Structure formats: structure tokens, C-alpha cells
Amino acid sequence: MSSARKRLEVRSLQTLYDVSERRACRVLGFARNVHRHVSRRVEPTALKMRLKDLALARPRYGYRRLTVLLRREGWHVNHKRVYRLYREEGLTVRVKRRKKLASRPRVKPPAAEVANERWTLDFMSDATTDGRKFRTLTVLDVFTRECLALRAARRFPSKAVTEALERVIARRGAPRVLQVDNGPEFTCNHFDAWSFSRGIRIDFIRPGKPVENAHIESFNGRVRDECLNTRWFDTLDQARRALQDWRRDYNQVRPHSRLGDLAPEAFAARMARHGEPSRLRTVAAKT
Image 1: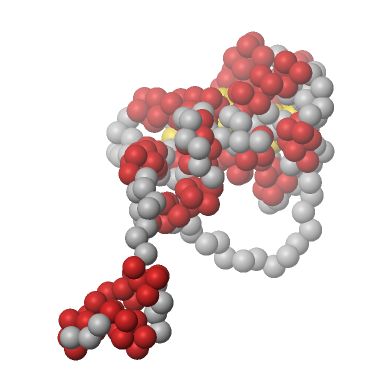
Image 2 (image 1 turned 45 degrees about the vertical axis):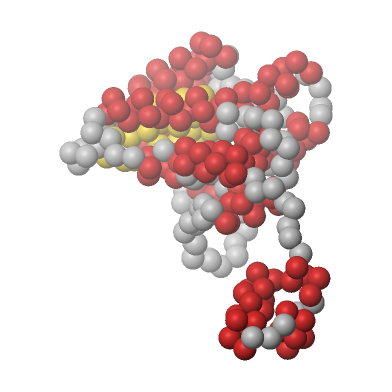
């Protein structure tokens, strides 16, 4: 039983039976010094308000990522205090528990050691309010975790995929390897000829084994959880704007636990400045 609850019971006994504080505490086995203790802790009203604002702005962030954002703003807090306030304010994110499957061997792709060594691609599907479906192309740098492209269209033939990749290559150079599944956009002659002309190796995962492309699968889950599932899109242009806003926030603001709580662009900039192994680089290479 909490101290606050026992204090209430002591006061109730005093009122109902007209007994002294000493006797009421003795009956309940409650120390008088604890009963008389007055907390001097200042209620962190400002911190609570800021935590609620951040949680409302980013409803799918857990308390650890919110702790990182608070520290960036200059709040001197640890994750335990944020967790306590997080629970008190009822901000806990609801997590859909997946059905536990039988254990099976997993194939882990070679770890990327530098930026642009390995990109991974995939598609996501959604629909506007009129029921018309659209597809989203996601492109991720495995080492820096940067989202290189997040493009939506009603149709995404192979030629549109290579055009999107050409825009990314124009600003940051070509990758050594593209890791993809066995979708028709990636197995067609056009994509094969384009990759050959660019000198890019295509690494296909085994059919029915999305876990072999775990980086992009995890990233797609974040996109759906934090962007696509949080709003309705009346038009394709609305979806495109929302995706680009989310991509910018992901690359520049969102803390990534595998990058030492840095945002992907900040991590990439640090790697470019130092150009040598570091603790953060070691962490990224192990994942």
C-alpha cells in the first residue's frame, strides 16, 4: 500500500473514532515520521508539458526516443525519470504483439563498412480515401541508415525505379550493391541492363525470405507506423508531401539507437569528417 493511501486511512481513523494521530498510526502499523513527511520535490510541470507536446507530435515514439529529443533541447533528464512521467501521463505506445513463430535459421547479409556500399530497396502499398491504391518506393543506405528515396506513384514500373535511383546517384554517387527481393520490377531485363551499365551488383534475397532484407523491412515498418497509418490521404499529392516531410524528419531529427542516438544525416556527416573506425561505426557495422 502506498504512503499516500495510508495517510488517508490515518486521517479517516482519526475522524471516525476521534483518536489521536499516534494511536491511529500504531493501529495501521504506519510510522508517524512517514505520515508527517512533506515532500519537497518540485512538480516538473514544464517537463511534463514538453513531454506531452513531443508525444503528441510524435505519437509512435517511445520514451527512449523522447528522452533523446528532450536532451537535445537542453533538458537534463535520464530515461528513468522520463519513463515515470511517460507512464503517469498515459503516453505509452500500444504495441501489437506478433504471433511467436517457430525458431528458424536466418541468413545475415554481409555487414556494410562504408556509406554507399550497400543500398536496399522495397515497395509498400497504401490507398487514398477514394479507394485507389498507390505504391511507395523506399531506398535505404544500410550503413548510414539514411532514407535515400521515398517516392509514391500509382504505378511503379522498372523504368520509374531506375529513374528514381538515377536522381539519388546524381547527388551522392552509385552504390556497390543493391539488395532487393524478387519482384518483377527488379528481375526484368530493363533493371538488369541498367545495373550492368552502372557497374552495380544486384543481390537478390531468397524467395519468401524477407528477413534476409531485414533493414528495409524494419524501415518500412517505421514508415507505416509513424506516417501512413497516422493519417488519411485524399490525393496522391498529399501522400507525397507527407512522405517527404517524414523522410526529412527521419534523416535529420529522428534519433536512431543503432547510430548512438544520432540522426542518420548527423551520423553520415560524422563518418565523413573522421573517415576512420569509431565506436559508432563499429555499432553500425555489427547490425
